[in-house]
Image (cartoon, rainbow, N blue to C red; front, side, top):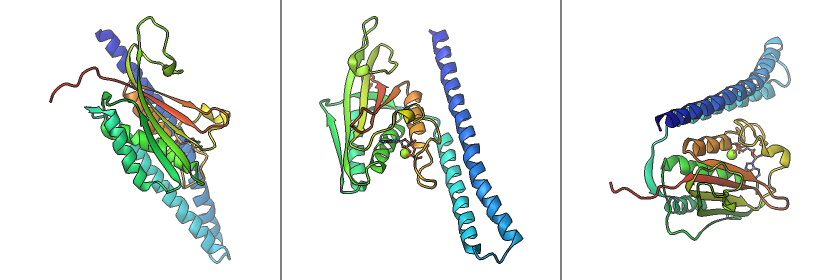
Length: 257
Ligand SMILES: Nc1ncnc2c1ncn2[C@@H]1O[C@H](COP(=O)(O)OP(=O)(O)OP(=O)(O)O)[C@@H](O)[C@H]1O
Ligand SMILES: [Mg+2]
């Protein structure tokens, strides 16, 4: 029992280190690009302080510095929140609350719909981080639908039984025996090209122009779900939008506090 637990911990540590390594590599790459622009334009200005394009150079230096500052803020946020604080709560309730919150900030041409047959499903998790994960997914969907569209958050549960074949709902996720909550975020956007599917959770993978996306949103979602002992899956069936599926372990009973 202890051995298993230790193994699990070691594995989690390795995963975290792998993510940190990817983060560091992506970070170095981004900062190099930023520094290249700043170095080039400041050299040009030093060589020719009265260059006709002086203001343009300065503006570029300024935006790149701002971008770098924003990157650092995001990275700090990313590492600071690596520790999770678990409580027992109802995921249906959190999803409903999050939908309400998001509905107020989404543009009018985007419809956000919560779909569930469950009355409640309890998890032992970090409320704030799970909410963050939902928000990142919904914001991504919004970004892909500037002309408007629909976003569904679907919530249901499944049970994986020892020795029995995995239920269909488990998809390609790696789930151990027990009860799981399944949270899906699906949109009517353009979907994700097949060649991007394997990179999408990598820190700093983004298709957005510089300054508009850092590529940390899905890396964060991945980190959050993994820290909770869950799994995450992305699908993009042809002719449909993107579907992100999160699996989180369900707690049988809710202890009284
Ligand atoms: N719902 C979606 N539909 C289509 N593509 C998506 C969707 N969600 C994510 N993507 C793709 O995955 C990329 C990575 O998403 P991620 O949230 O990690 O970063 P980002 O949104 O680009 O930047 P950030 O979240 O840091 O502001 C996006 O740039 C986009 O190409
Ligand atoms: Mg994002």
